[in-house]
Length: 220
Image 1 (cartoon, one colour):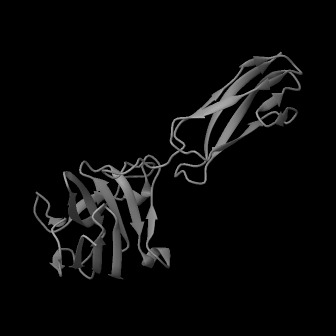
Image 2 (image 1 turned 120 degrees about the vertical axis):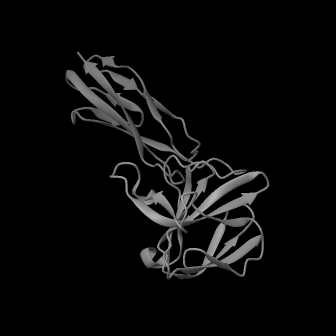
Image 3 (image 1 turned 45 degrees about the horizontal axis):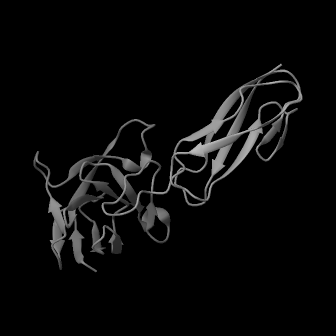
């Protein structure tokens, strides 16, 4: 344990044992920062929540630990010296998040009042990497490759690549024409016309699983 403190309310820090976590105040004044609701993603209306923010510095790197607090909050925060956190005695706090110094989301935390048990750590798709750490494991962009034209009765072999770092991927091909026959990466086209073949890539370790790509094939 490299640093530890107890936060009471939105600003009172007690039992601080180190110097890595530093409470910050908004430049506009006040005790809390207005932060976009990180757990809702980017596909919904933008809403904000009032948060306590600590700058966490290790070596030359700084991240921001963001906590959805209120005047009744009480929590002990232990920092391991490598941007890993444990939370104890959690009261009146629902969520937290870790951001880069430029407010790119790295991961977020779901506390027991929501999770119903242990603190859940969530790594969202497209997450930034922790300083000094490895990039998050993702599938990334899937690119399907293969012929876009074929003759009726042809068997065509297709393939795919990914841009991410996941090493445990598997892919399943499908066609929107139920007459086509699929065996592994081989598709036998039965009947003329245009159909869409889809590759669905899954990974047990990737945060963005599953991911897909398609190819439109004209069969004559």
